[in-house]
Length: 75
Image (cartoon, rainbow, N blue to C red):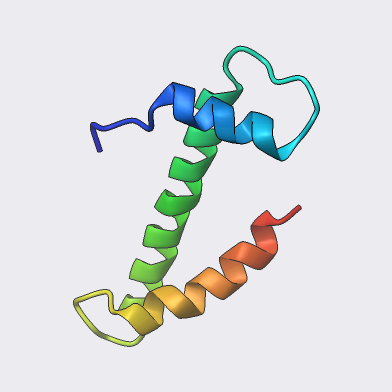
């Protein structure tokens, strides 16, 4: 994944959502957090597919894991 999200677009969207101050590298932290969540989703989907003895990760594996993952990351 060599492409990064445009920083200006991400910062402008973050500013629209709240009236709080945003640090210099807050947009990078958001992007890193997104990458960590996607990595965890991929790993857990792979484990779910392995449990069902399939070699490929299918949509229902991702959907099943996404429900649990979203509940645990809401904070």
